Image (cartoon, rainbow, N blue to C red):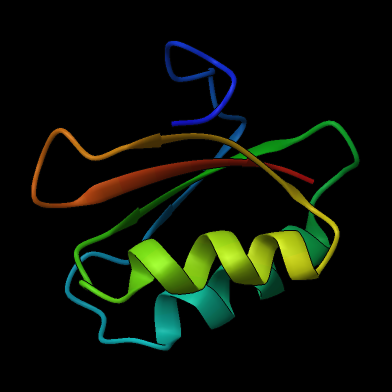
Length: 81
């Protein structure tokens, strides 16, 4: 997992439940581009490929994955701009 032991409090939420890949990853980057520097985005996705796509795309665009919650069928990602 990532450095935090529990999920941070998000300032924004992006619910991509039911959306096929690559839309969750694409929309994540689009949303992060519009947020402020200290904002934390929570992304909810049940696309199986998002567990690979979202963290890689986030890092490649210079953002930081703070926490990933895989305790349910929909994965929750917490990302800092």
